[in-house]
Amino acid sequence: MNYKATLYSEQFTDGKVSVELQLFHGDLLIARHDSGSVEFDLKNAKLVAGGFDNNMLYIYPDHNVTSPAILVQDLSLLKEISASSNEIVRQKAMQATGIQKKKKFNKIAGIILIIVFFSGLMSIAFTQSAGIIVKLIPVKWDEKIGELGYPSAIASMAPGSTKIEDKYVLQSIEEIKNRLSVSLKNTPFKYNITVLKSPVENAFALPGGKIVIFTGILLKVDSPEELAGILAHEIMHVEKRHAMKQIVSRMGLSVLFQVIVGDMADAGSVILEVGSELLSLGYSRNMETEADKEGIILLSNAGIPADGMIQFFKKMSENEKELKSMSWLLTHPLSEKRADELAKIYKKYPPLNVKKFSTNWKILKSHLK
Image 1 (tube, rainbow, N blue to C red):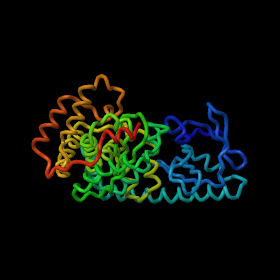
Image 2: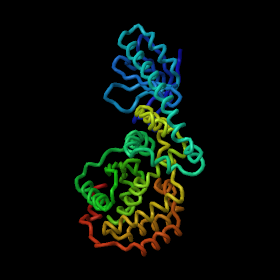
Image 3: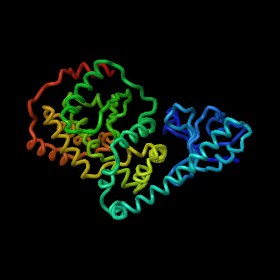
Image 4: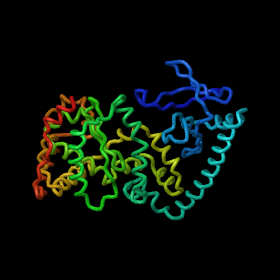
């Protein structure tokens, strides 16, 4: 019997491809239309049954890998594997089946709890306030979602990109990040920045504090203050949990269900299903305005003039028509009016104890070429 599935790998342009599977002497035969067939060894693999409707099979290449290689939306494959003549493979399938049954029981119990304790919340959730739900979700879930979403986000946005290891570049960016981080009040997040060599003109923050900067946008930035403005804006998206609110708005109470039952594996399946869409969810106008205002306040507290942030936004808005290919504009729509609003906010929150950065931006750019 053939099964339709999704094969995940960084080598693919979109991070994944559609394939067909067939069980063959205890191993999976994977058929791709573009490159023939390959065998996948199930003896060393990890099988996890789950998904919100208990209809998915996640196949990991081994027990030490957190991202599955194969996603099958048909548990008939698991039943067929359970009848395999290979004892090791059969035991793995039986174990996955047992875990699935346990998950079903936990989910039922969790849903009952939700009905009892959150019945009043359900109507609110779908109509006006994903923010209320997000407050019920521990911040550790932001971190988990950020981790799970990172590979597919990079695979879809900049396949083939490589990490920058240049000490001058990393130390310069770390200096900016540290200035901003220490100025955050009671933040539950630890910020970590990865710089990737790619012409993609973008920088983004995933839930939980993982920030990615592509060299394409670093070459567009003309000062450490401009980059500080970009990072302050992205950090405030994380602090205000904007991405989490968008995910909950899009998926209803699904995420909350998994949090209540404490099923980490199924929470991971949320992001695998969303995949690279995590970046394309976009932010509402109110979220962008909030990140603008709070970003400027953060710059002020860190002793960094917001002129750089405003200058970068104005530069981008002035060239918006010519720079439609710039991916940062796709996730952060600009306008001259918005840049003017930033200037008004800046007047209300002038920087405190201004300190210059030690970075020579021209030298930093030379290290990127």
